[in-house]
Image (cartoon, rainbow, N blue to C red; front, side):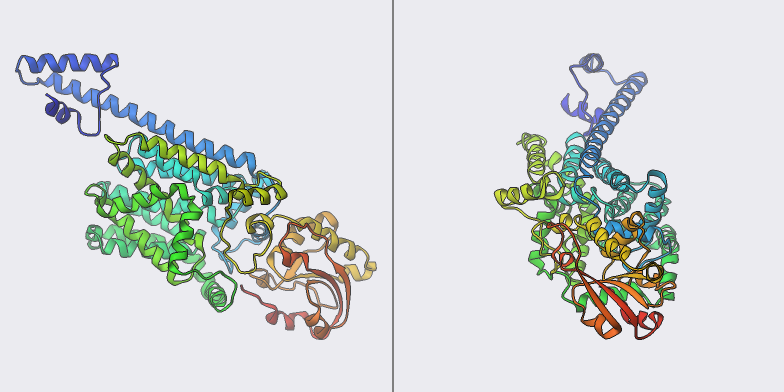
Length: 563
């Protein structure tokens, strides 16, 4: 009887016996079998209807789970994203959004275009700038749940996948400010979702959607190229290499290249500035260089140590489980990308976009392995992840005042690993770079307004990095300041405008270069800033420089700083 019941209902569907519908079915089932008669055509249709009804109920339940976790993530970000101030990179991205182009020195153009739309629709308040990151973070949670379901997961698989995403420290952090990083998990996971659908027997034209996502991902961040290479190699070493003999995968590649082509042309026309930037960083001491073991251990920290059993368990399940091996290409892609970023001495978060797919696989693994024995581990793991996320949230979300945050970090003995050698502030770099910008601009404005009117009309403001320049451009109009000049990153391409250099306000921590370049230099003292700002910003002085010894346009190529 039990074997026949499983045959009729399928291994993944379980008829709820305690419902009226279930009682009716099992009564009819047992009566039929008791008479030792064969199922009639009407009975077969009845069973099909029951299975269809159960599947519809399961789909509705899964949608509610995914929506519930996604909305919870959205609420977390909307309630906390105004805690401190504008992040350094946000000020730069806003400046880039005002100079739309098909490329930028240090990132692909899609996020700038999206930010431009956000500024038009919602304005430039701190809350408005961070609406899209909150939404993107929400979608990433939901996409992990959808992927878990596509891999055969049900209630607990989806729950654990979404819980892992919601409890991840990195994803909590990036959903709280604007950057291209917040969109990256969507494109990486979206590509894997379509690949899983193809493995599950979806029409081969699904490859076209795969190519579309890869192409958009390339227009968001160049790191999609490394993940795309990882997927290609993974396909080559898996049973999915059969698709290489068919046209659809090559059409997908053509679509991806076509979408990315405008940025490629932009790069070619300017001598591959992104490659020059990456080479310069590699030759400098800017980034913290990690050993392979340090890189992997910091993955555990960034994702939240409590989530480690989920995503690492998912990786192992994909590699060794008979059921998981169907999707082994995902594990191969992760491992290849891991090796790529270790060899490149990439920052610890460069691999973060790969974890939603491992959370999905881990959710399915936990649901399968603990379906009968140790079933309590599934809810216990979800509770542990959410509890630890609540405990560690103040370290990545602006919940506590700075002084209380430092005391809290000392109490729990936890801090986020540094990614750059210059990040020596008391607060984590993510928070320190949200302090002091408007105070700095106010200091510059006081010096600027102290100039005689004829000098004010001719004076330019030169900054050493895009954070300072972005702050001048963002807050400056309120104080009557002109646009900033800088040789850092894409500001270099925006040039000196009409300024001659006859009078410049320069922000610098040392006037040595300025005394060589100008006939006179007057130090008007340090800028006012926040004690919580980055130390290098606290050391800045405002220099009034007059009489540039050469034209600014001739000097400009020497002012380029791509680091």
